[in-house]
Length: 467
Image (cartoon, rainbow, N blue to C red; front, side, top):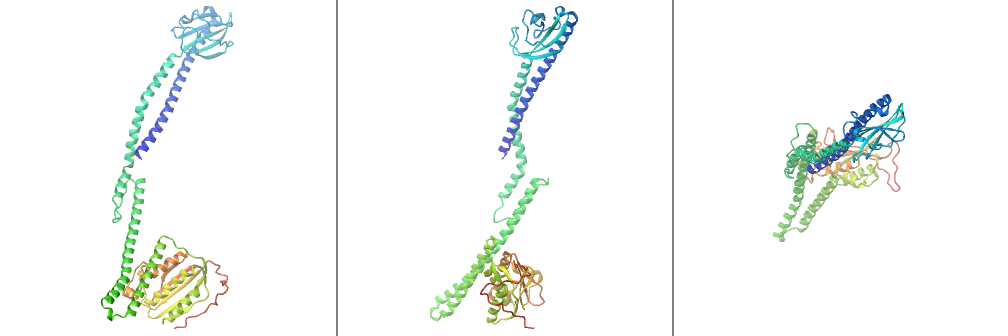
């Protein structure tokens, strides 16, 4: 980058200097030519005034035409030379310009008939005399202009390359100085490994772009460190959870292998299948959460009767011997029915797992939002730890351990599914036990009655009858 910056700066300066040099040389040449033209015009004007007074034949041109590069002639209308300065004696008229009396003309001549190869600027001044109209020709050589222009151009050419070298070296040095903080950051970041993301880039005290860059990099490193910690904790917890059923299966099989004669193979098979089911469910939960982390949820969009989902769960829990109170008027949402069923089941299983035998299921609608509440009569969750239960593999106490059948993934999965639908899951206030509140957008008009599909069974209405 330093080389590129120095090269670009050098090219810009080179182009600028070239244009400036050409413009300066051209301007200097024009100014010198204008000065010589003005001098010739002054000489022509002086001679014209004298010719008007004494006549063209009596004009004294010796002093006026002094110098071998100054040429003065007085010619008549036919081009005959009536008077001439010493350098122009015996020579024909310098130019063919013949302005009328009182007018003047400036001519740039590549050569004049006086054995000279130089260019000249010639001013022709018309004047009326006692012998008739004549023209005064005053010429100045442009040799000095050519010499001056050559000298200036040579100086520019001689200094052009050294100046560019200085510019290149200076640009390279200044770019290095400007990028020094960036290089320092690069070395600092290069020393940060994936196993230790605690290092930070020291910000510049100047409060400039480098400071903001350092702050941005530190924010990025902090995010990476937090994500790495979460990932390592998740992997460690997942590994422990996966080892638990595997260890149980291995222990069962090793005992059966060592004592095959006294083994109840039906019991062993049942235990192994139970642990295999637990292992399968755990792997499925981990895959679902991984897809959620990658925002790879693929949700179906269909009409879902929340009241039917809640009533189905109530029947399942009652079959298992749980006392259930239900209030489920018809409420319909648009979403993925299979995933929403899993949310309701996770909440119901969680209530049974941590309650004392009684569960309450409630469905209602609040404007454009549908609400499902699942409450238990267990010990409840302290207010300061209500968000913690949605962290993965979290168990707040021994009653929420593996021995009770939980993995610490049910509530995190339920919240992920709820948020994928644009809703949320939280722990509500409750005088007794725990109250989980699921909110989902209904995605249909809240004032119109929810339409039912052909073949749908009529909604069953149950109310809370327990005191």
